[in-house]
Image (cartoon, rainbow, N blue to C red; front, top):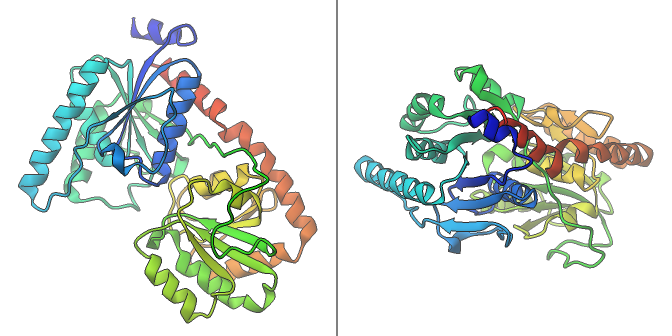
Length: 378
């Protein structure tokens, strides 16, 4: 009966609920927005549920999506308080799903996935949990790891955002495990836009973008730039993003005397205008799941230099086709790749041409089609 119902998804308007902790700045949050909008454009009835309040939003929710903010996020400093808070969250999610009665519930990231599975027990909705990072590399508290192992098999599907992430969930039944890449959407080109403070439009830009934390490796990028500073006359590196290491990164920029070469723009509501005006995009990540920033740069037509870290970059970047992959933890290799491309305009142009196929693989329409095929498996 369920199979027959979902097999007719092209004719049936599904009710889909997406559950995520918040809509603060981040990759999983962008994915939630893109998926919700993609489902809504296809004619489905879509509700986006956040555990956090709407006041914490960084991203705007399209008007064709129903929004429910449960406002139940709070920091718990004791295990008993954490247990009580999470039981309350499960109850709130369950009440919301019972009221909405969605055909499918899609949740994002480990903690929210666990809560959503428990909340949906004995409800009619199908539950799909999504994982955005390699569990063998990205650590959680022991009780979340134990809960994940215990409750994930009760989900109808686990969707990993890359093959590298999926390998970390080898203990899941293979029949319930699938890879669907994140859908990528970038803003339309704009001739006029506000140039971030400190960025010099008269110079050639190299951009980098991500949360300013240890895993993104911006300290490695700074070391790489320092090695070739004398070769970067007329160039400027714009680092888009914010995070816990912003002060340390700013201090290192000063320590290496790179103030004239590197600009920290902070978070930008629309970073694609800056990326699109760049000649190159570069990341020195120590770890990724499915790097949205890399894919967005490719979709903006900009070649990418990236570390071949676990996991994701090698699934979208091919050296000599649309960018270059270099070893992790190696400022020297990043510096060499930068020099190879800024000194060879013909190669740079060829790599830019090679970015064009990314839309056919990671655009919203082909990814939504894969999700709809998944629904047909229920």
